[in-house]
Length: 493
Ligand code: BES
Ligand code: MN
Ligand code: ZN
Picture 1 (tube, helix red, strand yellow):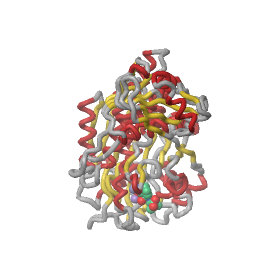
Picture 2 (cartoon, protein in one colour; picture 1 turned 120 degrees about the vertical axis):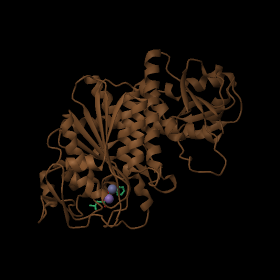
Picture 3 (cartoon, rainbow, N blue to C red; picture 1 turned 90 degrees about the vertical axis):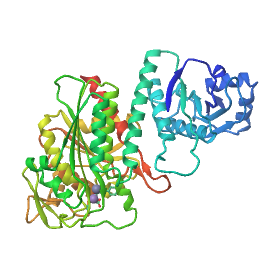
Picture 4 (spheres, rainbow, N blue to C red; picture 1 turned 30 degrees about the vertical axis):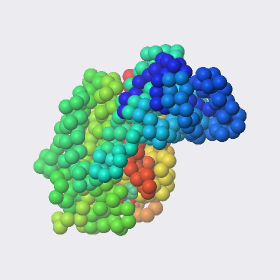
């Protein structure tokens, strides 16, 4: 999909689908007024009749030409001046969907010129690209039959005329983030037999050849030498070789980097503590943290952000092979701490703890891990917000704010000392599970024992990284949140 700005007015624009906003209380946006004039008041009449009320995200196609546009799509944008960020994104997404349903191969939208509450015009433009790409995304490369659905190949956006440079920057940022989100979705939607740890390593290497990113892949023997007993313990149950992928992007000389650590379990069967069969296919999404890290590295390099960034991806399958770890087994982590594995399905924290200890060597200014870590987080927060736990209040706050701004939200859970005792073990330094209560928090408590050397935040994305049911598929979250976080860091140096 191609995205570009247009300086032309709506009544001058040649496109297969012209998209203009309608407000609640029968108001026409500026662009709708311009079309209304060349249609002799037809749009005002439609709105007066109440055929479209202007509720956010409502759409009404007019199957007639207007000026050089083949069709016009009216889109509800709520009460003028009151359009909330979430409503704006929803409206942009529905508009793109509707354009695709009309089989338009080109579209031109004036929705970005509509004011969004508490957001800048640049935000509106950036989000127009991100939300359009998100709405039109399909993973159909493995389907061999059926008509290829037509969808728009190019989108023009009518931006507020004021500052051309600002608009171009916003468009470019939107494109970089939109592509990163699609990249993350592609990696995660690919099935476990194709998206293996080796595949993720290849994808990382490919990133390194396309961008100014240094890539290093640690193999089993390297990890043995280092003493990554926890990560390697998970890998014992599968024939697929485990990897530790390390990516480095340097945009700010010798400054301390921000490190992103992503859980890369390419399939989580639970291991010997086998999961029940229902929806087990969705455990191919257990590498969404890894996909997020690779995607953010790509976008940061694309945008040439003036920061230093390290991406760390521990990746393996979790299968119940003959050499698999068993409940009761005790392993020694890279940190030297011993772990009693009471449940082999709590594998994410085992691969993350070694990756987090390894991260110390980069002397990071801050570390954020991203993981589909607990089913309990899905129960607690559903699909709306990821879980946020941190050993550093300022860092947690930064991430929270970035998520709110990007409309890619997370919500804090307490990481109190009192929860730590749930991890007590009679036989090792700690157990890898903490019982049924507060499962998301005790998982983070486990990780906190490996992150004392730096400011750290943990994002549990089990509920937001993918959708189930009819819309099953990866969401690319929390790429937008992290890109906002990194851009704020870049601005503050
Ligand atoms: N990958 C799962 C967490 C998960 C569950 C993600 C559902 C998305 C949807 C993780 O490895 C896991 O199995 N966690 C266990 C931990 C338990 C054994 C303490 C869980 O949440 O049940
Ligand atoms: Mn598991
Ligand atoms: Zn898992």
